Length: 126
Image (cartoon, rainbow, N blue to C red; front, side, top):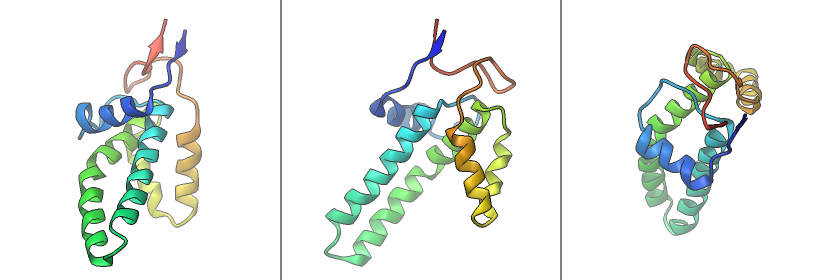
């Protein structure tokens, strides 16, 4: 048994359509990082397209950030669930520098390869 890695498109579709405001269950490492890459690329595209006006760029990026806030928070919580941690650990991000470093290390960890209290292993292939 191994964990199948999701594709870029699959990760974005899961986060936005299937799990828009879902804070329960688990999300694999590939699903999490592909969606983070999507947000990063979207930010760059917005910066390039609206470089002619700082005000318009700020408005558009603010709207996009608000639209992606809930899917991203849900994905962060589900990723923490995947390594056996409570979603409440997200509040570590309020500790300057140290908190986000700890979270990044946790987000990079392998999934627990057995079911835990948050659900079955995501993307498992028998």
